[in-house]
Image 1 (cartoon, one colour):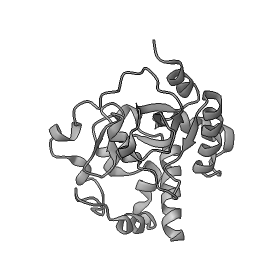
Image 2 (cartoon, rainbow, N blue to C red):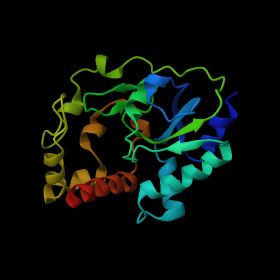
Image 3 (tube, rainbow, N blue to C red):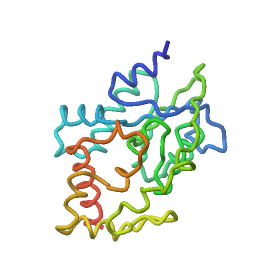
Image 4 (cartoon, rainbow, N blue to C red):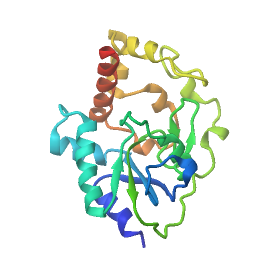
Length: 218
């Protein structure tokens, strides 16, 4: 039977993606005895977001409100990947918590969800839970034939070593980039892992507009 805390996270439309008892080397907030990474997989969290706030609301603001309520109910505190002072090491926590591997795109790839997940917060608890550490599974990219994610981008923004953010943003702002704006990142769609969790068009378009808007504000 699943742990009650994990059940509560799922009922709130988030997915528990990894967990561990942090030590000094993990650079977690002081007094955090147990850390659970939570986020979205597939459409459930976005459906709740759209239902409660409408897509005109910024997702980060909604996330902070929704997760703070969940954290209070569970006796936890929360930190977020969009906090910039300090920038919390979510990808390092993902490695530590068995939440996946680094893909050639630089994104975290999960053995079940593929590239179709994102960390929205970390719940910090003052006690240690008796939870079996999740296994990251084998690295799916190591046996992927051809690595289609690296050749799917229309402007070659990914080369396996880095991500050309400006080339991506410029493409999205042009007429020829509207297919990417409507459907989402074609490199992510090219990955064969976790396709059943791919974002629906409304969710994909929301994220692409948010990304482009942030680049244009810089």
